[in-house]
Length: 246
Ligand code: NAD
Image (cartoon, rainbow, N blue to C red; front, side, top):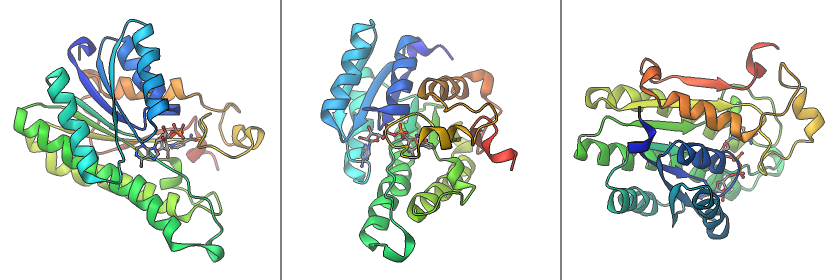
């Protein structure tokens, strides 16, 4: 893949992993659409990219709203002429103990983390098919889609498990069009969503360090290369061994 010719839409790119990935792709020459609910953060990501000589544009997007996600994909095609990569990354936590759960919290978490990814797959795949683009869709899951390791975030765990299966199903259905779908499952990454005290989080990883968002961005970049073409339908653990050494 020559990133210079690629257009990527990244949801949740106003912060954390999304912002780091936006900066990574832009630094390699890709054109980046920053799609996020947070306008100030989204504009800041665009500014950071432009100051470094890259190309990016912001569109206000609530991934829980199907029309918003379609608009973000259409926007990429309108201003940059393509959509080659879709990174369905936006996510929220929604912490509350199960017995004190307000179903509205569960609803919102599933709407953003699960439906948001589903809408992103739909919008990007339809556009890629229409334009004859053999693109890549990357879905951000979590190690918590595999491990029930944290109390008080049942909605997060279940929505991330759904992302893993959606990745498998979408890869199967989109393979005839040459569209590849890959999941990632990060461990504890040093971003605002990660509320666990840093010293407790670092102990979860083999090398006892919190994962930096730039490390996830580098891995997403690798997964989008033609050299990673054989990876399809899998969710790749980006967790410094968290899920394999219990
Ligand atoms: P973050 O809080 O820094 O970034 C999340 C971004 O998503 C923010 O910019 C926020 O404005 C945006 N967002 C939230 N709701 C949205 C909505 N409805 N529509 C559009 N944008 C919305 O956190 P992060 O760690 O960078 O999280 C990115 C993704 O990585 C999430 O899906 C998260 O679940 C996943 N993840 C994070 C970790 C971690 O430890 N940080 C681990 C595994 C997976």
